Length: 296
Image (cartoon, rainbow, N blue to C red):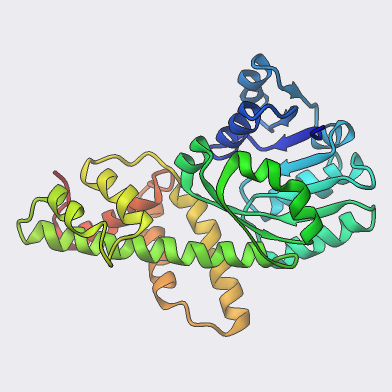
């Protein structure tokens, strides 16, 4: 018999994840700060909770997918947080991207109440959330990972237990380094091809499947040349993650030169009101320097 699932956070990622949990037949209770986002799921048979605490009171497993470290702390440790409704033996799964140090501290406070926690951040954009093909990188105890695996399988296709508590968040930040630097490289290549008079569709077809290929190039390159900027993952959220990367790298003494460059390019776009655009919009900063656009 499957356990009752509480899901907190119905943003661009969370909505797709809940949809796939419900399609898989799981009993889901939802909570979101903007209550109207719960209505479509309630119409399909989900329950609505009045607070994170209330969701924890009626569910065995609580999954969280919210924006930033303070948001996770609020929904777990706050006045109406999960910690006040959860019972010993429950499991909290945080699928947000937050500071690994805070993750370990939150887990410590939950453990004092007999509640386990996994940090299980995700990658794959809104497409992966909608299609159930997310990459999920998990930190925590092996037994808790095994318990959660049926729910992970409903939401993702690449599920990897990467280590102890906090390791999931560390791997996710490494993932974000790869995403932004790959997108910067794709942007430079597209502009170079445009300046050289090459058909951009043919350029993408020629290189995407080769050694230079990447997920960002294959999925975001066509959006760039089609002038499509809706966020699979917004610049504002990307910047939140890059601040975590830069802060952690500074403490560890690791050079993240290209990542810092991407952070500052994104900052210029935020200054021009583009923070809500997709993170592939980094090319717009380069286009402003070049005075040309890489479009069909």
